[in-house]
Length: 350
Length: 280
Image 1 (cartoon, rainbow over the protein chains, first blue to last red):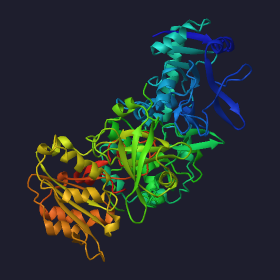
Image 2 (image 1 turned 90 degrees about the vertical axis):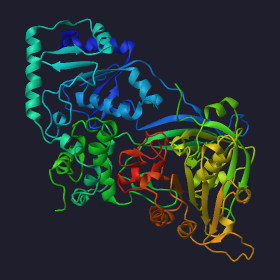
Image 3 (image 1 turned 180 degrees about the vertical axis):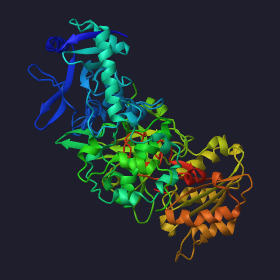
Image 4 (image 1 turned 30 degrees about the vertical axis):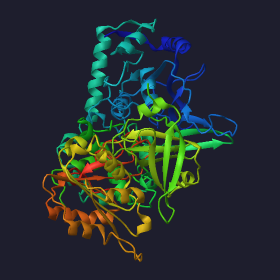
C-alpha cells in the first residue's frame, strides 16, 4: 500500500493535472447544497464539505438515462427496431467521496452485477471509475455508519483514502486503481510516522463519536414473516406522506422505471429513478395493487433495506448510515428508530 | 457484453382473436434474424417482455412450446397502452421480444410423475406451452398421466379451442373442460366452477404434481380441494403475475419479500410461497 503526504497548497495543481487526463468529479457548493459535479477549469472543489445532499449514486445510475434508441420514420427500413444508445465510458476519478457512499456502491453491485445478469451501464461505469475517498473527521449527528458495517474511514469501497490532517492530506492507496492514481500525484512526499499516527487518532475519535446505535445482527436473526407481520408498522407509517425523498437521496435505493419518449420520428427508451413509496410502482394492469396501502409501502422500504437484502445476499444491511433520509425526511421518520424496533427482542403485538 | 435490455426484433406473422369478447389475441412472431431465435432458448413456464418502440414493454407468458421451432407465440389480454396497441397491429409489422425471462416449471422434478394441470380464464398460456411440450412424441414417455382441468366463464372465453378439441380426442391426456355456465344446447363438456370440477374428477395425488394458474378467486377455492386430494404444498406449483419493468431482477418493483417474481419466479411452489409475505 502506497502512503504519501500531499500539502493542501499543492492540491489545485495536482487536480488540474488529473483533469487533463480524466474526467474528474468532486463536491462543489451549488445553490444551497454540495453536489458532485464534473469539474471544469475554475470550479471550486470543496474538500471541507460535510456531505452532499444527493448521494453520488447518480454518477453510476443517473436520475434519468437513455437506455436505447429507435426510429419511427416511415421510410426507415429499421423503423421500430430498438438499438443500443452510444455512451461515454471514459476513465474518470471521483474525488472526495465519503467512505459510506463508496461502500454503498458495493452493496448496489449485488443488484446490478450478478453472476448471471450484468447491468451493462452500471458495470462499465464502475470499471472506468477510480474512487478517491475522504475520511470523515467530524461525522454528522445523523450519521450511523459504524452501526451498519462501514465507518468514517472505511476504505473497503474505495481505491484511495484521503485523510485531512489540517495542512495536508494523507493519501493511502488500497487497490490497483488506487496505486495507479497515487503515481499520478507528483507532488506527494513519503508519509511520516507522525502523519500516520495523526490519521489513526482522527479515525479513532470519529468512530468513538458515532458509537453503535442499533444492532443489525439482531434483525438478521429474526424471522422474516414475524417482522413483516409486526404491529409497529402501523405506528412507523402513520406520519409518512409517501413523498419519496428518502428513496431519492438514498445511496442504496436503485429502483427505476422504464419509459419510452418520442419526439417526432425519433425515440428513446429511458430509465428513470422510481420509488417504492409511490402506489403506481406496483400497480398491475388489471387494477390490482399488492402494495396499495401506505403501510405496505413504508414496510417494504425498511424491510428491503434491513431484512430482505441481507437475507437474499447473505450479507449486511443495505444501508450505509449516511443519514440523508434522517436529515431530510419532512416528517422526521428515523431509520435508526425503525431498526431499533425491528431488532427489539419482542415484536409481539403491543 | 450482452445487453439484457435490448429486445430482439420480430415480425408479426399472424394475429388470431381467441375469445368472443375480443380481449385476447394470439400473436405468432418470427425473429428477423434467425440467430436471435437460437439465442431465445426457452423452457415452458418462462415469459418475455413484448416491446413496442415508442410505447414500452409488457411481460407476457410464452404460449408456444420449444418443440415448435420457427416462431414464438404470445396471447395478449387488452389492458393498457402497449397491449391495446398490439391488438391493433397487423401481420408484417415489426416489434420486439426480450427474453426468455424468469424460471420455468420444474421439468426435471416432474419427470416420471403424473401431472394435474388446472387453469382458469386466460391464465392458460404457459399451460398450453407445457401441454404441447409434454405431448411431443419425444417428451411424452418422460411423464405419467396428464390430467387437465380448464375452465372459463362461458365457452366463448376458452383459449385455443381447436387444440382443446384435438386434445379431447387423444388417449394420452385426460381433458376436463368446463364453463361456469352456458346456454349452448350443444355444449358437450362440463358445466361448473373449476374447484368443483376438480373435486368431482378427483385426480389421484399419488406420485403427482399439480400446476395451477388462474384468477386469485379460482386458486383460493381450488387449493383446499387439492389439499383434500392429498397434494402437499411442495407438489402444488403456481405462476405469479406482478407489475414488471426490467424483467431481470434489477429495477426493484416485483419483489415478494426476498424474491423477485421476474427473476426468482414467476414459478413458485405453494410451500415456497408459504414462507414469503402475503403481498401479491
